[in-house]
Image 1 (tube, rainbow, N blue to C red):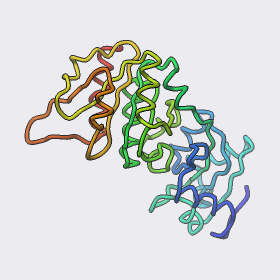
Image 2 (image 1 turned 90 degrees about the vertical axis):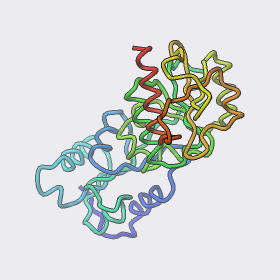
Image 3 (image 1 turned 135 degrees about the vertical axis):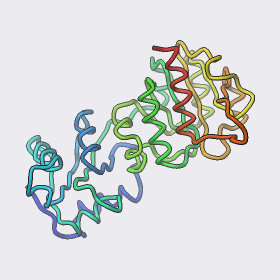
Length: 265
């Protein structure tokens, strides 16, 4: 197994660059921890490089098993000391294995026009952790794809990937469309659009969630804009007991996804 002793090594710099700024195309992904690396491998993603703590190779650990298995399949795997790993890993306390994986990007317009039965559209979700949790809830509740629109965080940043717990590696996720373009695209493809609004919408169980449906949820603070909601086929509002007026976007999305699931399963 190759080793890296310097924090200035080109591989280290490549890891650090992805930690600072995610790949805008969503092709190269920075993964931290055995869980994410294992999920990426199970999803059939390729790997550019893997760094594993030398200390994890001294005994039988999950990180060691993953590293050796990936090396045997032809991946460049590097054994690194704690100082180098702390430079490579994006988290404050490195977990022992970090990787740069590679995925094939999806075209957002093709996802709109495709045969996906239940899409979740995240609009202006700026917190990467919230976006990752939303993607995780979407997969758990049976969504078939996620579109990330507007001023949202990258769904393929390390924080969003960590929050999704592997869901963003399995579920079709596309980003880059303007939200109004996405709504027109969905409507043109015969997909019913449902806007989540804080007030004035119908209760979740009053919505017809069957058939091809897209649920649009807005980001922190302002939520969906009135212009976007006005272009949708229906509006849904989660009933809340005063004085609570809003929910975290990932929580709200999970409630609505599971309301849809009750009709779709």
